[in-house]
Length: 356
Image (cartoon, rainbow, N blue to C red; front, top):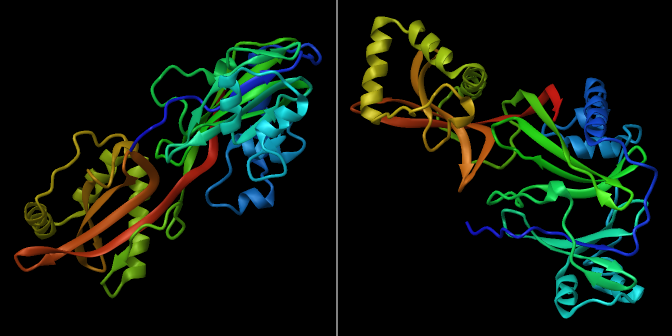
């Protein structure tokens, strides 16, 4: 899948106007971490009702009393005024290259309480930002750097993130959030605070979450099927299996094998040979178990032995937190797929929010 690796924001400043003096970056991130801990300890009903929750930054921005506010677009393609039209209305003098960049931009944002702006577009299925940056001094544009937390150097660092302006209490700031639906159950939020006429170095809040499971909720509409007569029972067994594997794949595999009697162990080994099972090289990290290289285990449901293939759903290069559970049973001298079950897994209770 092609990736566009340019960053997606065009920044312009029209005579900087600074707010009250900024505090240190780490102090702002500590306030964000504390506010999010308090928010998730007693989440609003609207948030608690969602199986796949909003990101920490979105929840903080929506809370109203978290100390974090997010700035909306001041111009946007498809709305009353496009970014370039807004710039024309202000009578700003731009080079042809900057005019072209602004004409292609899809949104325009303003850093609160300043004359510092950001405009740009997000492209491709990987959601990559396309970036040009400049300031306008006395009506003339000149290039400037992005906020520190928007200057990723790694390939793909400009893709799949969210970049916004807002405030932490009274301090304007540039936010970049990396929040996805991968199996890692982590996310990061970096913050670059504005200090009179420049951005201070960024700080980072790292979030880790407990898993939350559902036998039927899923992030995508995954292909599922079941030809057995006890499909509901198989789904509940698949849920219990996924919970055990997520907790400790090695222990789950050992415990399920230890539960088998001698005859069942022989049947399981025969099923493995018929299915030509190849176990993953690394089984101790549940985030590394994928539907393309699943962990294979025995489960017994209603007295029937099944060969269970367990791994996270994948689409191309993207790995999702939802689990795929495929169940095979013996069919003479062959194996037969009897069920493909999707078990939802998402970020649940907050484990930790650390600042660096």
